[in-house]
Image 1 (cartoon, helix red, strand yellow):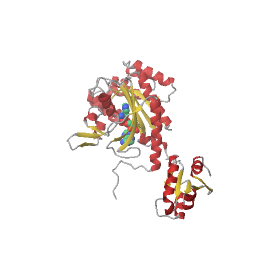
Image 2: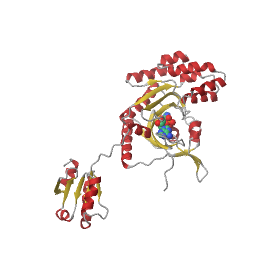
Image 3: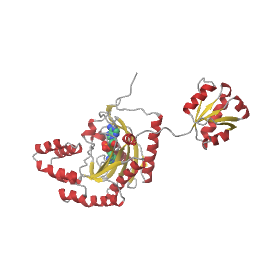
Image 4: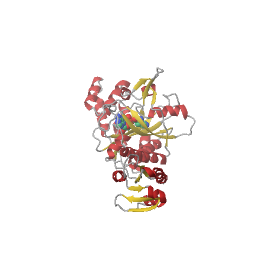
Length: 409
Ligand code: HAM
């Protein structure tokens, strides 16, 4: 028996319907904030991701050469392609631009609970509003989307400026290494890296910064940074909206393109892979050949949100099973059509089953049996049976449709 590739999943109808419901909630919420949906290709030129996303993601990429010899990659995340699209298509649009997307992403990681090789991100990008108000909007939007989907989670918000300021004298590659170690909370590795470059004195302010929970505490450790006022204004807006969050200047993010505000969210009952959202401010437009426009956005790990939400509810829609005989086949197809036109999920017997067999099957799969036999065909009626109670009546097709719609039993 052939198996699906490692790290991928199949979705049965109940799960698929649950996913579609949650997608719809997320799209609707994003739309209320003015974020309209876009779509970019599943694969792009590899270069798009190697330019800036950082070694972590590049090492996990699904890459291939097409028949024309082009080096391509399945998208490992949404942001780079959205900014490529902005530079290609949307330079002339009035700013800021508010876009959202639901994209399947591909990363060659070791699969475990909440970590897949094909997964979906619900993302949003705000392009051309490089302001504390823009940063605040993106965070508040993310929170609105996650909460409207029914998720309870912990939100951590930070800014890279204080940490970058503490590390400002380090060579670029050492700074990256140190920040990557902080991102992985590998404090032993951090001590070793600082010792290797003779900068062990940085360990103390770095550790203190991880504990700072207000802008004042952070600036007391790192000194004033040019972004001070911006950070304070953003915090003021977030507080004015009663947002529940923890200020955390230890957030580094795994991707390399962030330049300012950064944020992450964590949900309970997910185990090690509990990060359900990551985002922040970045500048990618210039790198892709456009002007230097500041942007900000996030990616929600859609699959993780669903795992965190728990059990998948069974489908709630009412189902009608149309029961018939070979002689009334044409009539039964017409009866089914009337129910479908009224928006009712309607299934017609397709197998060589007798009346008893059809009723038994209906009992397992439907809420109502609608008998469209020869007698009913002659009188233009149906027999409607509510399967939960066993009550039945013969009536016109229109009355039967009304009965199912209003929950007759
Ligand atoms: P990211 O943190 O790499 O950021 O991914 C965003 C979210 O995708 C993660 O927080 C996680 O929930 C989910 N995720 C990542 N890898 C997997 C996986 N293997 N299986 C399941 N879920 C996963 C980004 O991708 C940025 N593009 C976010 C962003 C948008 N920043 C600015 N704009």
